[in-house]
Amino acid sequence: GNSVTQMEGPVTLSEEAFLTINCTYTATGYPSLFWYVQYPGEGLQLLLKATKADDKGSNKGFEATYRKETTSFHLEKGSVQVSDSAVYFCAQGGSEKLVFGKGTKLTVNP
Amino acid sequence: GAVVSQHPSRVICKSGTSVKIECRSLDFQATTMFWYRQFPKQSLMLMATSNEGSKATYEQGVEKDKFLINHASLTLSTLTVTSAHPEDSSFYICSAREGTGREKLFFGSGTQLSVL
Image 1 (cartoon, rainbow over the protein chains, first blue to last red):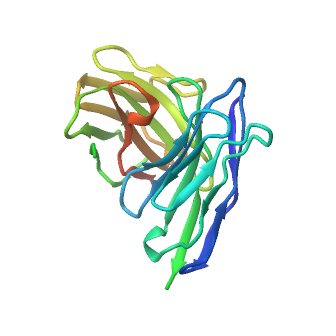
Image 2: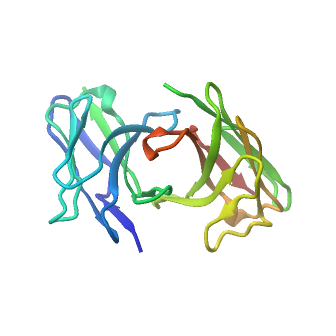
Image 3: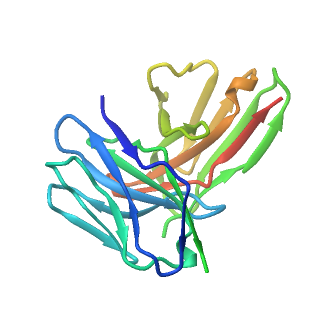
């Protein structure tokens, strides 16, 4: 069945460090891919998305490229800030339902 | 952006009691709401899809008599965990869809249920 695998956390970085959170998926067909972010005490929010191969989603300095050949959608940011501390979820959806990864907790220290 | 309010954020109950969790869309009408459950270090797992005015559709392996879902209005869906047991302790989160399209999903902040 469809699944999403993302790197285990927690991830701890210093401010201005480079961030990569790996995400791979298995699916029948070509799902849309998403990154959601959950800040402390808040609900999940859509961070970015890509709907077809080679699409690049971007928002708030974060980027992820839909790679069909490697079935991946890795999240990257060139320079993280303390305010980026949150839990990040990779997800795929080929229909109404979303399949999520386990989430990766990111802590950015000043 | 659109806001989904989920209440309570945390609840502790005794084994055998029932617990109700509310999910409200505050500034939009949600014809469809989803209920997820997350165990520690596990993925968010879809439990059921709730459509306003009709019965919920449960995912395989989810007991519909144990997890009662009511979507009586376009802004409110409730999940009732009946006769709760310690193994029901988990993080429950709802989402509401505004119109059509997966990108118009908005999530509540979740409810941490602990059953003693």
